[in-house]
Length: 268
Image (cartoon, rainbow, N blue to C red):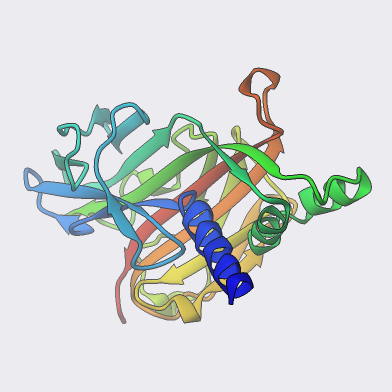
C-alpha cells in the first residue's frame, strides 16, 4: 500500500512538473474585426484543455502582437486571466507572440528519463547512457516560446503572409502552409527553427482541440520541416521541444526550449 501511494505521488509529480513546460497562447477568438479587442490567455498542460495561467510580469520577456506594420505590446494587469487584451488594427493576419524567462526544475532519474523519451529527446537519453548519467537526476532550466495566429476580417490569402515570417523566437514553429486554408486542401507543413536556423530530427506534435487521443507526431527533416495531415477543421495546437547544454552560470545541466503554435483551420 505504501509503495502504491509513493508511486502515485511520483506520477503526480511527473505530470505536474512536465506539463508545466508545455505552454501556449489561446485567444478568445481566432478571427476578429479591426478595432475589436481579443483577449489572450496563457495555457499550460499536456495537450488540451490545459489550465489557464494568470499574467506574471516576472516571467515575461516578450508578449506582443505582430502584424504587417510591426509589433505592439499586449497589455494587461499582473495576475490577470486572460493575460492580456489587444485590438487588431487592420485586416490581415497578426501573430500573438510570447517568450518567457528561464525557470528551473529538478526531476528524479526515472521521471527525467521518461520525460525525455516522451518528448522525443533521444539524443539526450543516449548521451546520459553513454556517460553513465542515466541514474542521475535531471537538473534543467526551461523557457517558453509561443505564437497564436489571429485573422483580422477582410484578409485575403494573398496578403502580406505575416504567418510565414519568423518573429525571432529562440525556438520557433513557422507555418509553410497557410493555416487558414481548409483542411481538405492537402497536408500542412511547418518548419522548426532554432536560433533562426532549421532544426533537424526534432519531434513535433499536433493536437486538435478536445482531441488529445488523435494527436499526430512527426520528426523534422534536414530542412527542419514536419508535415501533417490535419484532417479536422477547428483549433490546433502544435508544439516541439529542443534541449541543449545549460549555461554554466545557471547551475543546471540542461536547458530546454519549448515552442508552440495555435491557429484555427476552417472547414470545407
